[in-house]
Length: 325
Image (cartoon, rainbow, N blue to C red; front, top):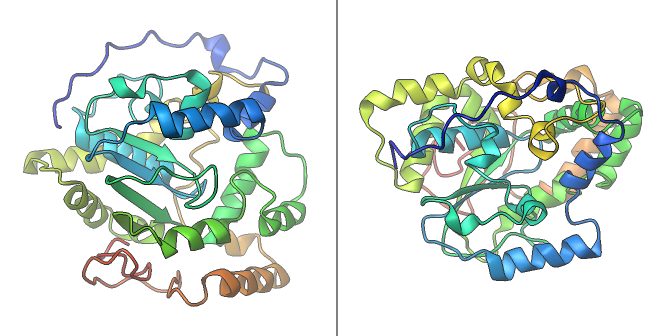
């Protein structure tokens, strides 16, 4: 795992690709993120899921609802399974976005083991995650912070011109990319197929990054040398990743450059709890009502630090198998 051979350093991107010049480019990103929106792409997706993707026992799926720490987990898995050098153009070269592989007809069979994929796919439905005897890491973030972060992503990357109250209504109705946050979390928490899932909570990862990363390593069966841990922790810090933001921005991944995309706007804060600066008391009440409907009986909470419990794929997040979930 460690010391895997990396591709040669790519040529630096021309400056003109790093400034918003292509009119209408944000529409391409919308197409990329809404990959399953039409019939031809649906057929490509079905081909990927049932024909092109051949599961391996050591495959790892990083699963999140958007804006829930996906990129952070990609970087963590990359640092754990390679020499960790930053000689890639974009993180999805080494930890691919699974459903977007349909756009590029990427040969995922050529990827070395252990393969790690990121995905925002739902648990159930036609366009759902492949069910296999591999590993799934599902990270949940406080939905209120997801809402605010998604609002800023829509503005910076998708050309959204509406107000926050308007976006709040869309989010609560599930009329955003990847649908309802509540439904997404509820389905994955239920886990009726008893997939091998490690549940993590974003807030706990922020509170104890090393503890969370060590749990990930244990779950994946990685034997990380003691001397490598300081490097992993440093390179997965917000400050380090912010220096290489273009290597993580989905705009660069999809088109290299898109009109209306602000370079340096993808990694915003890497914090939690700032939703209170945006939500009115009425919005807060509506969110809590929906939360109770979908997740009220699951034990999921974001109000207090989690405590460690034995691993259990159906345990409430907040215990999630250990101190980081």
